[in-house]
Length: 555
Image (cartoon, rainbow, N blue to C red):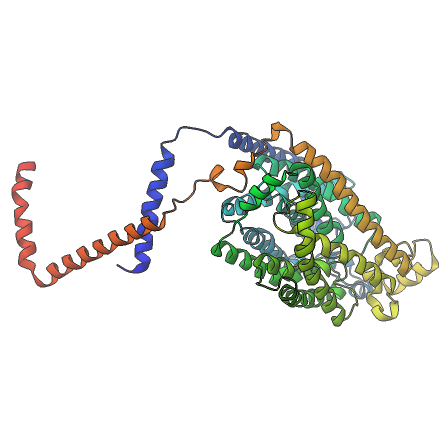
């Protein structure tokens, strides 16, 4: 018997123990039943709403059924120059712009799926007593939010015939919404019941969609990676909910902190999630960038992540002095991806991307060292996963940096991509300047004629609006979640998988030693039997002959 086989025997025996221990219990969990019924009701409602409102987008229909009278929901990756060439040869540009959306977007869609469904779940599996719930609830929320976000975003962008067009872009937008909700729940990880997770997602998806629409469609901010309307919003929404829901006494806070213990294996899982997020973050920041700007977004994001990683190690060694903290390293390494989000596709130059990343990593370390104790001691607010220092502070920093970059932008620096980088700077529809640009760029949509510093002002305004909306809606959501109908959990049940999951039976050190000794004895017995079969067949024959009377009596 090999060592691996011993492990399988132990696992099988422990599994049997689990089945016998839990199988005999007739007690049911009414909170889980209520949660299950709510999910069933939500899924049935989603099916009905999809049946009434949702249809395939223009590019997902057969070519023969595409109507040229309906403009596609997004122009995808065709550049203005490509459009001009297509028009010159007599081809309808809309047919070409949406001809290969699967080829253009599916690779990045896969990258973002890995980030959201796999990497994020591993990243938050850092608590020893809450690994099942952290990853399981995150996966459940992902499946829920994709459907709910499709409907909510669709109602913000209904077609003239009051339908919602569903495309690959819709699914990517839903993944962005998932990221926002999961970021918020990380502030409250382990302190919510399953029903509260669902209610929080129902509310936040609506508020997030409204904030995204306000920032991108009304204020027309430059924020390709969502640093302002996604990361900053999600961080302060979660902190506002926690401020209302989980403010605790000093003794309760100390007890809750004691439950946040991790383990060597959990930290390794979380670090694996960090590495996966690090690898795929450039896709997240560049997926919605126009074709001419997309490669620049990938490069700038990669550089910022590299710099933030080094900054986190360097500043940790200086600020903490004694030893590295795996939690700080994990958050600081990714802070560069957040901080570069608003300027990833702009002409900031590689050295500036490194500066932004290094500053973000430094902010994360300083936040953990100096800001976290203040929140805990003065406000009795425990940020369970350090969201404030990975998303909140880097998001604020990103918004301010984007204002500066927009303010100093010049069309000579950007060349032909200036109008793609700053669509609000395009002259208004009724101006002669716009008519001149339309000759060179036939697909160019009219803007507001903003100057660079006007755009900078709107960047700061969007940052303030996102924080304000997040905090107000978060406070209201926290008050709602405190209602008993949503089954708030008791402090003793927090950060505990045992309340929701069938758990593997864990053995003490003495029990493990006893099992090991028993397996060694079994190994010796099996070796002895092999020797009898190989070298003393007569002994085995005599043993078999001794069984014959027993067989006759039984017959």
